[in-house]
Image (tube, rainbow, N blue to C red):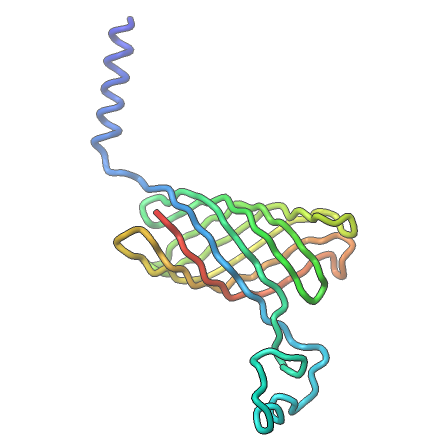
Amino acid sequence: MKLGLLAIFLFITSLSLSQEKLGKPFITGSVNLTIGINEDYKLFNDFNDVLFEDAPVFNDNSFLVPAAVFLRAGFGYEFKKRVAISFNAGFDYHWNYAISAFPTYGALKFNIRSSSFVEMSYGKMWRPSPKYSDGSYYGFGIGTQFRSDTGKNTILRLDFHSKGIYGFENNRIDSISFGFGFSFF
């Protein structure tokens, strides 16, 4: 009996090692920035600043101002360079509302071509402050991944984020962000 089990184990092991690998694990991270419209903007302020002063890119008179920053890190598994599943955690800070949040979520990424992808995310958002309760996290993104032979890849992405914050106006914060990231295979 033991010899039969050993033979079956060795047979399965040799089959699994001789077949083509289905995928590989990876580590990923990204930084996203959301740009918002300045509520205190006055028409033609940017034009006057450019003509008469050396205005910084973002100031109190700019039409667009940074609204939020999102830091993400995760790990996952890619199947045949087509589909990837990952588990992620992050830190979000919204300047306009002085809100911090810690999203944890799962993501499903589908590669359209060898470099372009679509990604959907769903998870839980944790709030460190008792002012607002914990909520849900949803995300949808598109992007491109520049692959290298060394396994270090650069990612550019455009993401839509929806954070459910009960007690907040409309019980959520929606934002669109531009991101820069990496992945290591």
